[in-house]
Image 1: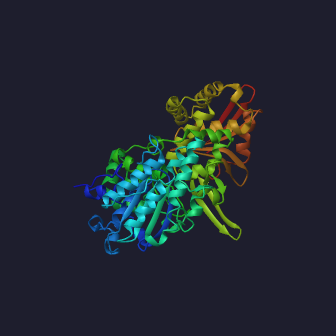
Image 2: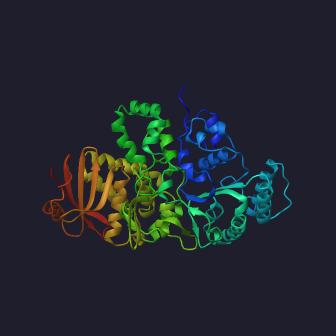
Image 3: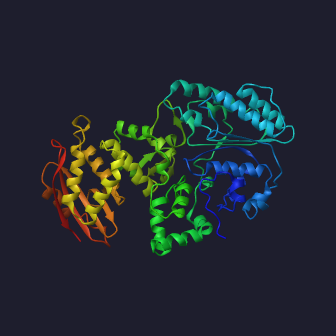
Length: 512
């Protein structure tokens, strides 16, 4: 009988008991076997809760659940007391965070046959650890440790109150280190300037540690081993040989990396794709913070630059909630990933970009709605219209439809700047789902935009003012079509009129 896909299952025991596929990550638990204190940041839907649940079962001595896994023969499975705090399930909105935490500690105490006398989060947590440690050292697992802060980013009063509560609770861990077997915290980001991690300066941040680069997410090798039947089913559905289908799967869903070497698939998107083979933005559709898109536009970032950004490690590992950095937030929340890492005597340089087509298309549509005064509900039909025009190489229809959008943007929010125009057109093209690159460097110059379709390349050169003949001539004189062998290439010279905020002229020519 074919094993079930573990869609939406975050409990390790349930996953194993209900005959679901489990991608064995336990070999990467080697560093956890002797205990210690660890922090791991990963985006939502990457399996952090399942990881915490697996570690919980391991320290509870549930050897039966690990049958056939690497850990089965590499751990003593001696039961230890475990305190698990899951802020994704803790109700700190309808009631105060203090009350929710005390209730959680009391519930854990009850499970171990204890009664807590303390009635504040800090004292209850401390009492619970000390009481449980009378038999064995305690394991503390915290899932989504930062949720009471990130859920109130723009409610300064409540956020500050929650910061104080969390600081007092997490502050218990360091002085009680001798009573603890292991501490493991997960979250989306490492919150800076809150003194949380200064109080926990004995904790090891493994978020960018190459040893743990594939601890969350699926590698291709893991997928091929765990899901062969489902992959064959997808290949039959698309009537495509599996090796060819892999190219599309990789383009759409692979690419997340925390060491610039190993790349993983988001489990949530990949499992939904296997369940209902269709190339969609599954992960993105579960929720994207509107404030992030608004912040990017407010700070006037050029959207095409998200394909390649440079950064040091600071914004990648910490977030200052009092001064949010959109690039750091995009990385920590999964909209950007590490594409290259360079180390030298002056420090470490990271290059960032979209992880895959799923994120590129969906995030670009979100930006298009913000930049182009679009109703989000109309973007999909608009994108299909552009797609049809491009398949037919009907540039009259393509630019006429783009002009309808440009005409609808109020003058007061339309900056008379070339970068704004280029950004809008880039977002429109990306929304089609085709591969789009802007500001492409060549040996002879810089191409404004290259669009790749299944059987065609289109090179676009944009000019503010002038003639479309001159724009097209630049493509020809600089021989931009070289380097795009294997498919026909069409060059398009485009002229934009800032006064009428419209594409005023265009001219296309087959180049290869």
